[in-house]
Amino acid sequence: MTTTEERLSRLEGAYEHVATKADVADVRVQIAETRTQIAETRTELKTQIAETRTELKTDIAKMESRLVRWIVGSVAAATSIALLVQRLAN
Image (cartoon, rainbow, N blue to C red; front, side, top):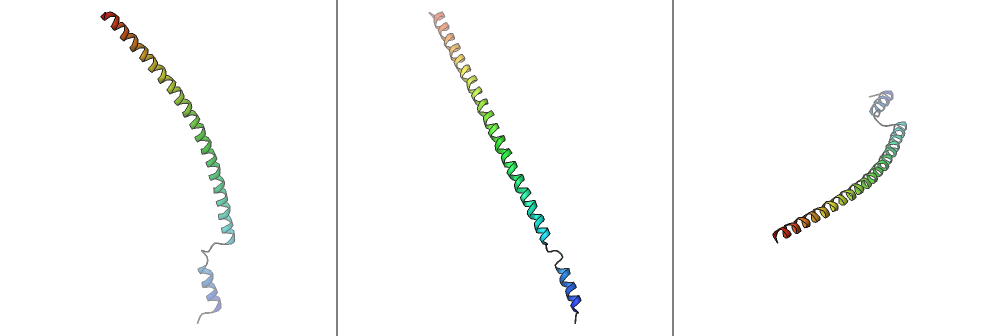
């Protein structure tokens, strides 16, 4: 038969891997810090996305303006060439 001390020793050894209240408190602090970091990162990403969206809209507007000018210029040049060819043919 085993003594009470032996039994208690076995029980204490079996529960060494169990988290203490301090361990749980540490994990809670780490989770809170992680949540704060996630919130900060989310805010930064939203700001960067908004800035990128604004830059893209500006770039698209500039490109659209350039395309319109090229199209208008090309149509004007093609019309001029067509009129010149027509006059030369007559």
